[in-house]
Length: 382
Image 1 (cartoon, one colour):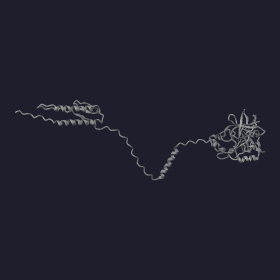
Image 2 (spheres, one colour):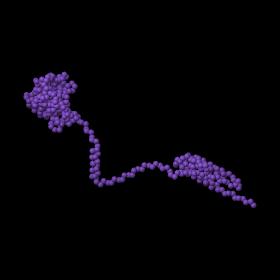
Image 3 (cartoon, rainbow, N blue to C red):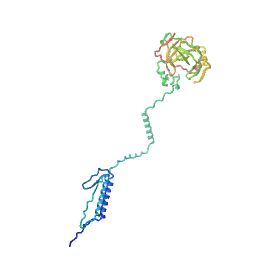
């Protein structure tokens, strides 16, 4: 009796499908793990093994899995002759390389730890002293502030007294007054025999034009602002009379002689140059020229009184003797401008005592002290 060998057992179809499904799940897991990195291109082994190392092999893996599933289905569907044993084909293997460590993201900059809380101030006075000390240190280290711009020289206060605004301090009151202390040709001077050179000089042909003006109490003295034409031909050009100034005492001293008063005629040349003609006055009979001005004398500082008509003439003021001294000097009040032609008449004219006293009541003494001659030549005109 012939024995029949039992057919070899094979795994049921559901089990084979489960193995394929597990293989597919393994491939999907490998793809998900390798998609987060960028390894080098895949390499194929001789056994058909696929090493998944970058996301670009996704399509290749899916295709191989699909092909394996289709071949398995085809084999299971084909009939097997009785008595034969189906040879199991090796399933394609998939080798998955998972990086041991994922690339680290750049670390975020850590915020600095919070500063520890400051202890409470135990001594408020110490904090105040520290602030004051620190403020003093900063103030000492800071550059000094620039000096303020100088004031308008016309608003600077000065006087003829002996205080900090007097003649000895004029040069420091304003930069424009520097010549008052630094100049070398300042006025007035003391005219002495050793400084005088006698010689011919041009006569002074004062005209007889009548003029008027406004009497002004400047606070420093009494002045007459001239209105009208009064011309003095001087050095070949016409010079115009611009104002009269009344000084007490007289500023220039002549051979040790001091006069109680002087009238100064201030002329301006065609190019702006200045000339001052000083007429010394000594006590005697009343002066008619002064009377016409004193009639309209202002009594308060900065007060002005205008003469009603032009009733003044220089010829009425001057002495009969027209000889004079001449030297290069300056204005005798701030800004003490130099380059002024100074002319001092040799012969004085008279002034009444009451006329002098009235001037002294209205105006303070306004004569600048005599200045150094510094070798200047004084010409005595004959």
